[in-house]
Length: 154
Image 1 (tube, helix red, strand yellow):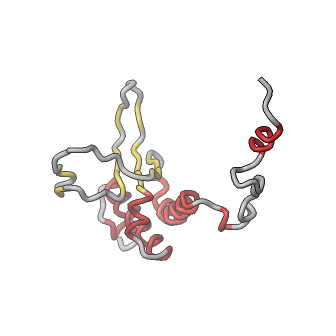
Image 2: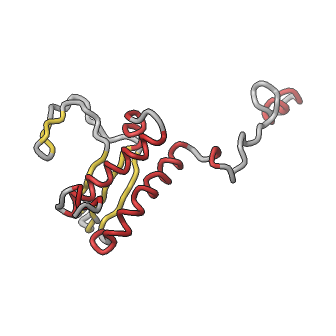
Image 3: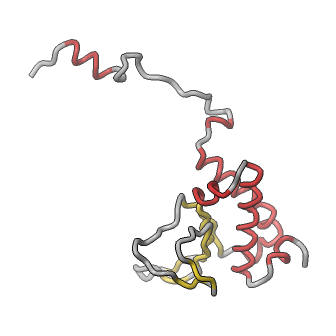
């Protein structure tokens, strides 16, 4: 079945007939990074001083970023670490080491939830501070020490 030349032309262009557009910013500029990429870089920056000081104790810990936490519909309020959560969206989670469904061992990991953290910050500086605070709390929970000890307050 042959197509008309008009149909062929339409397939090669966008719907407004302007052709394909290039990137808005060159890849070398920070503005070209997506929000997720900028958040990942922010987490790495916040983790660097903590990891530099506690490197030996954190060798079996992974840090991950997820967009949003998994929330089950119709779930009842649950107690987590002695605190009742009834709809509040968590900012992070410490997943202890264990065994997965296939019976393979898993490493402990801290999962930071990007969208809830971004929603609570008014500006990039506040987001950086919030990410740092959450990481300090989770690392302290993993090591079983107070957050002040992680910060260097011994």
